[in-house]
Image (cartoon, rainbow, N blue to C red; front, top):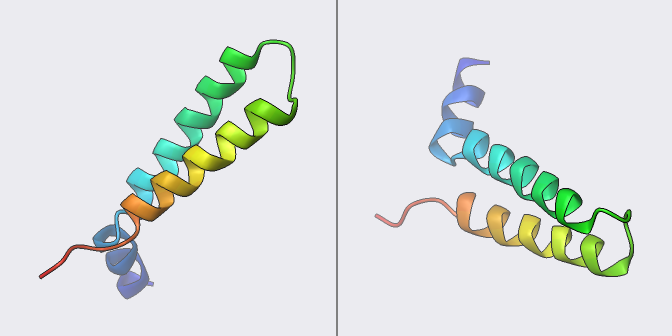
Length: 60
């Protein structure tokens, strides 16, 4: 378990998950009228962008 946690931290998983949750909540607040195609697309795009930048790992 310890190795899994260290690996997750090295890949910035906690920060990426927090960023996805916050950005999805902000999109939901901005949508106000409910989930239609545009807010869902925007939330998925933001989630993919955060995952791509947060989980890619550092270059060494």
